[in-house]
Image 1 (cartoon, rainbow, N blue to C red):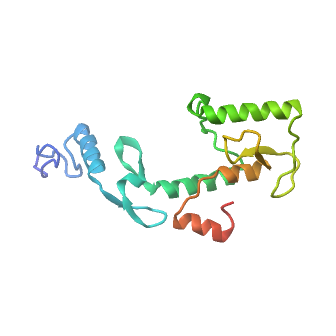
Image 2 (cartoon, one colour):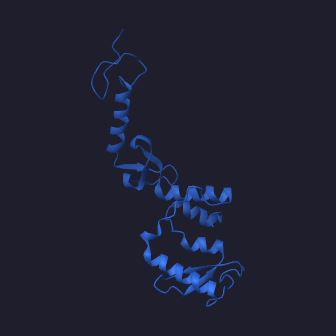
Image 3 (cartoon, rainbow, N blue to C red):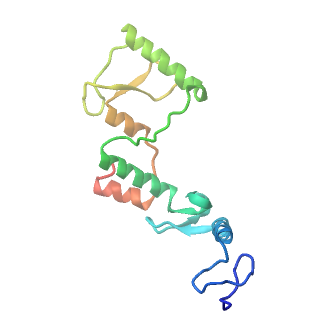
Length: 173
């Protein structure tokens, strides 16, 4: 058996010419050390060099190849292509937002009692609408929007070259 260099993690001699580390444990440790030492990284989609905090971590602490903004845009594109919302959408418990929860409850009660009548969408005129609260401290003051426009009202704006490209192409929303 020949000496094929030293393991970069533990400095023991390598036994095979193709291996980069001496064992699986050193391979995992090397991957981990490489992942935590990165301070900046280029995004594969928008090509911007961003700090490591702008990237999500995937398996073994390795940074994702897309920044969080581009990941959001790509996920939206994928959801629109499928024609439905993402299946892993998680709702926050109502205890986290007691003001929102109270506003929704008061509003739903007023609609059920007939105090407030449903109106068509203020943007497109669709008859099937949801009440959108601009201010949760005014529970009976709502803007009537169809499902499509209501979702768009809750979307967080994403500032990345990929999102701007979608806006120009018209494929984003």
